[in-house]
Every structure is written in structure tokens, then in C-alpha cells.
Length: 271
Ligand code: NAP
Image (cartoon, rainbow, N blue to C red; front, side, top):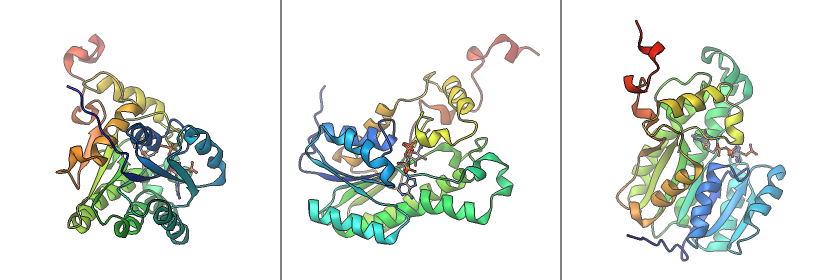
């Protein structure tokens, strides 16, 4: 069976691509392969050159700087969306940040400033971006963001980002109700650990990465391409009945608490 997805009539905004390893880029690549027109926003001038290189081979793209926490810059970004596209079909939010100090220590020591920064950048920006996108989606649309299972269970050193991801997942549910009437769907992808720039700021990432692969039913971590495939599915009309959901692409790691006995070493099982 072969299914071809033609998105040549569709327009997307992808927020938060730092380089070719970014999960936002994994989704954008799938959109571009399907012919979609894609606008990109990046936070700082530092990333402009990288994004220019990534999009160089595509003539249906444009890029614009936008710090997603700035209402002024968001207004300018969505005004550009209107000028370029007229209207919008897809919004991809692939943004996360927490101050280093909040990831290094104990969760209990999180300062109010660090809490506010992490939740503002990593969760509230989904709400504000969706609010700007809503009037540009008169024919319905689809909004997708990225989350991590540390929203549900404690992951060492993920700290305040766990709270931020819980807020992002809750926001996804509330936004799905506000926007459902207009046939705008809102979902979040819970991805397994991937080696990206953002992942480097998680102090115990190497351990987290190997544990997730060891425990996953598929015996490996998912690939960015698999995140891209799920993104394409959730954005396209293949998923028109799905909204408000957190959907996992983690090789099944989130359903396992301990390694099944047949996978454990002798030492693990010896009493
Ligand atoms: P990434 O390539 O570093 O992407 C994160 C992006 O967020 C960067 O482009 C970063 O820009 C941007 N950003 C941070 N603050 C911003 C702001 N105020 N305004 C606009 N953009 C801002 O890392 P990634 O892993 O692909 O992260 C994308 C999403 O996937 C995040 O939500 C992350 O939590 C989620 N996720 C990642 C993993 C993983 O293991 N990597 C797993 C599950 C979910 P700067 O570089 O300029 O800061």
C-alpha cells in the first residue's frame, strides 16, 4: 500500500529550529517533502545562518527572527505569515528552555525567576502562538508541539522542565477546546530522548538516553525521522479525528517500569 501526502496547497509556520538535529527540522523536512510552503522563525541572529543553509534547497520557504516570549515580535511574525501566505494551515511549536541553574541542582531549590522563565518559554509560548495563529486559520488547521514524558514521571535533573512539559500538555488540552469549534486541532508529541542542542543542557542526558533505549520494548531510542513522521501525520488530514492529545513516539519506553526478566542480566535477577 502506498499513501502519498500532497501538501502543496498548505502553509506552515515552524517555530524553533536551531540546526539539522532539531526536532522542529525533522517535522519541517517531512512537510517540505510533501510540498508544503513553510515559514520558519528563529530566536536569535546566531541561528539565522544555520536556517538559511537548511532551507537553501527549497524555494517555498522564508525565515524570520522571533523571540517567542516577546508579544511585539510575535505580532511581527504573524503579520509576516499573513503577508506571505494570507492564511495558515499548520503551526509547529518546537521551543523549550530552562536556565542551567534550575537543571543542575535539586528541584526543591528552583527559584521563582527560573520557574517563570522555563514555563514562560516552554509552555506559555504555545498559548500565545496559538492565539496569534487562530485568526489566520479560518478553514481549520493543526497545531503540534513537542513534549517529554518527564511531565508524568520524575526524570533525574529534568527538574523544572518536567513542570513546564506538564503545563504544555495541559495547555494542549485546553487549547483543543477553545479552538475545536473552528476545526483547529491541537496535539503534542512526546518524543523519546534525542541528541539535540536542547538535550545538551540536561545534566544526566547520557544516562537518560541509554536507559530509555535499554528499557524500550523496541530496544532502541526513536529517530528524529520517526518524530517527523508523527508530526506529518498529526498535521495532515490523516489525523482529522485527533485533538487535545499527548502522543508518544518513544519506542514504547513510557509503558515500561522495569526491564522484563528475559532482558535483564543474571546479576539483576539473582537474589
Ligand atoms: P533544539 O534544536 O535546541 O530546539 C529548541 C529550540 O527552541 C531552539 O531553536 C531554541 O533557540 C528555541 N528557543 C528557546 N527559547 C526560545 C524563545 N524564547 N523564542 C524562540 N525560540 C526559542 O532542541 P530540540 O530537542 O529539537 O527541542 C525542540 C522541542 O523538543 C523542545 O520543546 C524540547 O523540549 C522537545 N523535546 C526534545 C527532546 C530531546 O530529547 N531532544 C525530547 C522530547 C521533547 P536557541 O537555540 O536560540 O535557544
